[in-house]
Length: 140
Image 1 (cartoon, rainbow, N blue to C red):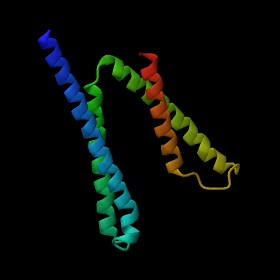
Image 2: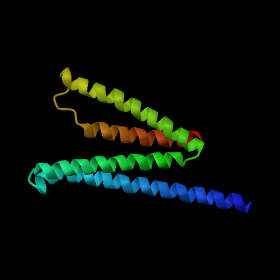
Image 3: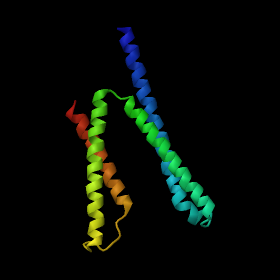
Image 4: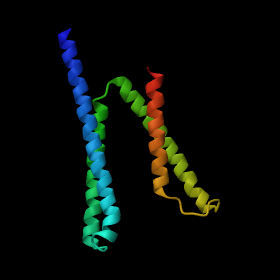
């Protein structure tokens, strides 16, 4: 029994470590996006070299965030992986359909403003969060 308890605690500790790693790299990616977005205007007066470096840093940190997310998913048990996969599939579908439709609305002049990617990102984040909650409740 002690062997099972210690392996369960090790698995749980590993999951927590992986989750913290994803949170760290996500935070770094968000900060680097803010620097790449606002740095040219407020920090370095549109210096091309600094702007390119900021964008490349954002791409690199985003790539590391993706790798951390992959590691986290690989560390999940089969049920958690299924919930994550289902939520990811729903999010991809909603993002693709809503994004194309949102752009189309502007093209055919049903909305009078330029579609913003931030609106789509917010929709996808909310979709993923709701899908994860529904998936976890479904398998309780």
